Length: 212
Image (cartoon, rainbow, N blue to C red; front, top):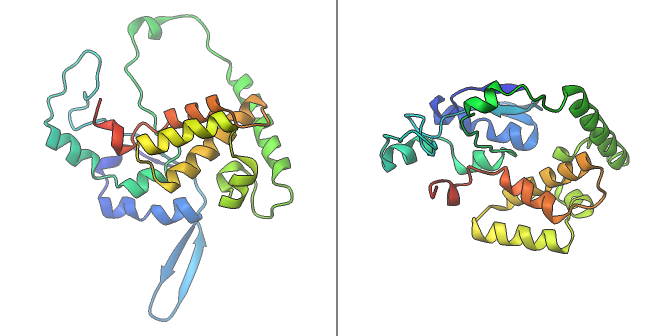
């Protein structure tokens, strides 16, 4: 796992280097006399503020940044890099009543059990596909075979892709996430609510983020 805090504060040239290993899970190095590849399969986790002051979209505090400052801040992360990040989740401030609540949440052991079952489903699904062990590693052909949603789900996906001008890579990522959500539910078919949940995890797609 690679964790990058304050993602836009890294030089753009450094962030762009992540595109190849996120896509191909290898790093290629070419020199005058040789070329070689190194394995680089990792999970990228990153965090960032919504703007330089940190309050853009805050329900109670006013953002003091100009539109130019916000756009300049977000533009440090390129669209192609964002496309390669499966889950882009905006976290809202937690109210005091929620922080002080003594109501227990779902136990970690129960979540772990659900994840283990989903991974077992995926291991069985890809047992005849060498080198593929989980949904994230699916090729386009495997996406068509295992992750295409039902008719209603496909229509929801078409509407989202068209309305938000998403790329072909975002299309693939949504299907992979939706397939995983369905696996966590133990559902054989990818349905419309799986698709809608996966789309909801792409908060930073540029066509809608700055229209908050």
